[in-house]
View 1 (cartoon, rainbow, N blue to C red):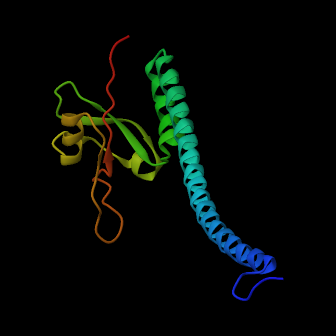
View 2 (tube, rainbow, N blue to C red):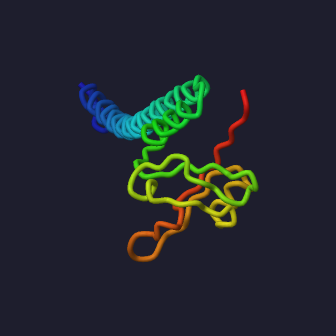
Length: 166
């Protein structure tokens, strides 16, 4: 028999169980939070893996394009390879490739694909987009246009390609 005020063995177990139950609820809440954090992390990693896979694919395309250009033996083969690269790698179906004249002032179409590419005439090196591309050696993209389509005489982008004798 126990004295009044002293816990019984059964009540001590209940108190211990209540304390254990509270600890378990805290652990459960902590684990749920941790699982949610890990799920967000896995989702982020999955996105990064998909992005890396896309970059690998893009780099493989560029490597194949470079090898194809390197293996070209004449101008016609270079132009065919360039057209294939612009369509499959860059993803454009409307473009013109121009070559700089001997004087270095005018660029003449050597390859045109699509409605604008086929209709393109000579382009002066003084055009701001072309001039910037030639000076920097980097791709230049025109800013936003007004309402409607851009005029055919205005380039949307200028990508300098350099060639050298083999």
